[in-house]
Image 1 (cartoon, rainbow, N blue to C red):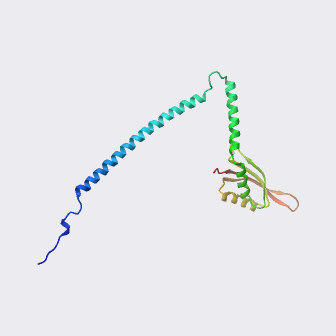
Image 2 (tube, one colour; image 1 turned 180 degrees about the horizontal axis):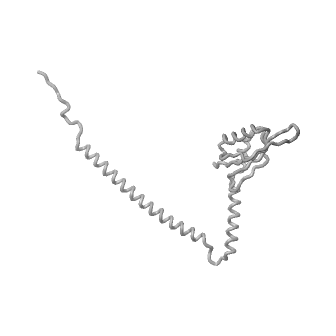
Image 3 (cartoon, rainbow, N blue to C red; image 1 turned 90 degrees about the vertical axis):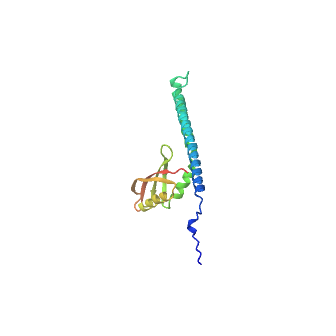
Length: 179
């Protein structure tokens, strides 16, 4: 006599429990979706309320206070702009900037002027070099330093400093990367 066991006819997974777990997970995910939707709606309402409050504050700050003449108000605003520019200029780390320029300047380049443009981030470097190859090397070192970007050679011209001494005068514009 030969006995065979057919294992394929016996169900190993309880289909009812699997369906219950899937339905439970789906209900939980739907509840989380509804909760996140309500949070988004509440946050959008808060954003619109804050935008309206901000617009009201801007309108109130934009107008001159009662009892102050137009001339006094404009004088006060000019004074505020002046002091804000001073604060902005003082907040710039000029020693760090000069250190970065110095570390990027190769041998054979003499800087004559470093002029910050309006806003303080734009710089104009004027100087002299032995030859144009040295100027090219300076441009490459400025780019490699990652402390400056938007580096442009604005002008260059040959100089005759004597009968045998030649050089190149150049002007470079760049923007200091804030860190």
